[in-house]
Image 1 (cartoon, rainbow, N blue to C red):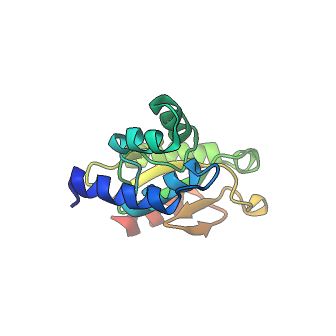
Image 2 (image 1 turned 90 degrees about the vertical axis):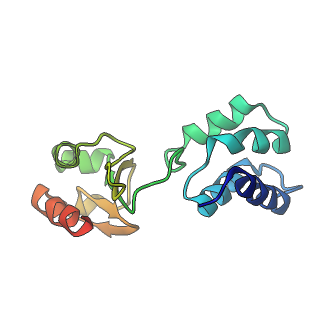
Length: 155
């Protein structure tokens, strides 16, 4: 587990790697998330100062994009497609089942830290909807029963 000094040092390395790069905020945020699994809120002032923007701007960009996390994700990440095509194929029903089964809302993690539930917008599997991304692997034609089997395998 990294302490705040280690985190600040790693972020400084990331900032140095992007020094002089125009429009580096998003690549920096991606690098920070890749390093820690999330973007710790305490690093936003450090990033903002480096990018010569306000902390509010850095926070606004980080929170605008759904793929940036403010907290560590669970061991497994279950992303359910929320795009229109999947919705017409039953994604709302599957999402409601997932929320009820896991006892979670979007962007939440089970208390044991094993599963994080996130929305995702279009995986390009419109012909196979509803679809999901399970630990980075695409799953098509998702049903409540298929979801239950996936969740069982995660626990």
